[in-house]
Length: 137
Image 1 (cartoon, rainbow, N blue to C red):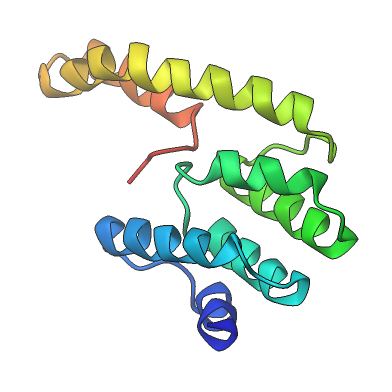
Image 2 (image 1 turned 180 degrees about the horizontal axis):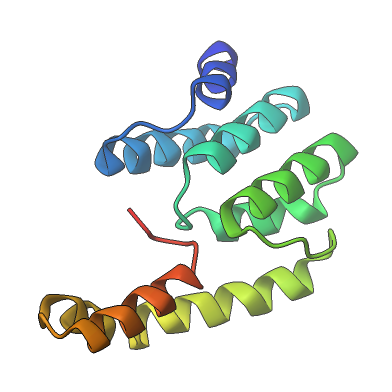
């Protein structure tokens, strides 16, 4: 497990979004019982592969007793989001709630705009998508 997590961090994400999601889910399952040094590698791998589905687990690790685990969780969150919030969970929780609301509320409409064939609607949709980094795959 530790070698696989380290390699995932170094190799990066697959071009297959399904593989990335399945691998990130496995990494999270390992995280539940991982010792701190392994947890750090797992979080870095998740930050490399995740498209936003694992954000709640990363936020939870911001309160870990191990400073290295907290730092790795913060690094992963910053990598997934492109944001530079501090290491406290509050800002991350608020951002994730907003991101999840956008994904469930606005994204379906914008997806229809992308398929409309209308250049103006497509530009508006692409601009909105560009402002959100999660669930791009």
